[in-house]
Length: 313
Image 1 (tube, rainbow, N blue to C red):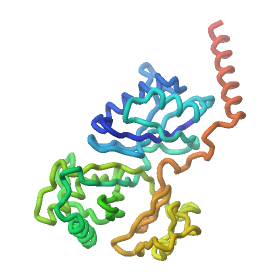
Image 2 (cartoon, rainbow, N blue to C red; image 1 turned 135 degrees about the vertical axis):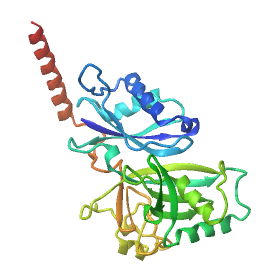
Image 3 (cartoon, one colour; image 1 turned 90 degrees about the vertical axis):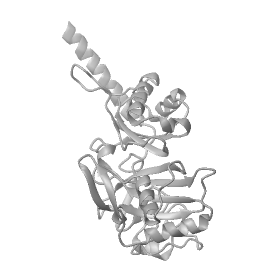
Image 4 (spheres, one colour; image 1 turned 180 degrees about the vertical axis):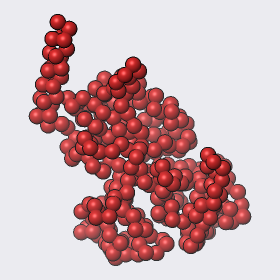
């Protein structure tokens, strides 16, 4: 049985690198007595896959890993056991069952949302003017930058890869391209912004938090809760993202403009793309396995034990 785990990473845990996080969760599985499956061969390892590496120094509310467990594992109690063994800064938010044919999280990542805020003592002299300059920067038709790659450097237009950018009080929210094809970091957007001002980005001025990680839905597979371009332009968006409960004071620009806005929730549509959070993509609705699944799993394990005894005899 495939399971997708959503966890948060806060506080001092943000200084732990991705490889150490992977090793840490391997220990969590053993300490929490999770019935995780192992690969075969002479060097078996836990069947585990992380969605997208998180940079050092960045906190997160939505990180994901996929594991494969025995069918008898109960997801509600598994989440509770894992949280009891978690170190400070880590917390399991949810455990969802995946269909057997579901792809791993790493292969489907398409976008990630970030919130950027100023560190205390690093605020600009005129925050309103700074925000206006950021919006003007995002309103440009093209934003070319030089990105360093493993093969050298290449010139890249950031504009098509920044799906949303807006000011939210004293913070800035960005929805950026992520995954294996084009992975854009929020620091890269900040560097391009400060270059447009003829300045250098202050190295310690910003606190960055990843809000969630998303996959892109193909055309024609938009869920019932998704918001179309027309609905975005009409402003009929509620806190939960359903058009029926619209708030009159929420105004959404047309998705055809450069200043389109995504909505909070599991499904977001902007710039002709439709994204859904990994937590809700292809997951079974139940948190707890039905008793029939548990009985079937126990029966299978009992048959395997009997086969093993007969082979030894």
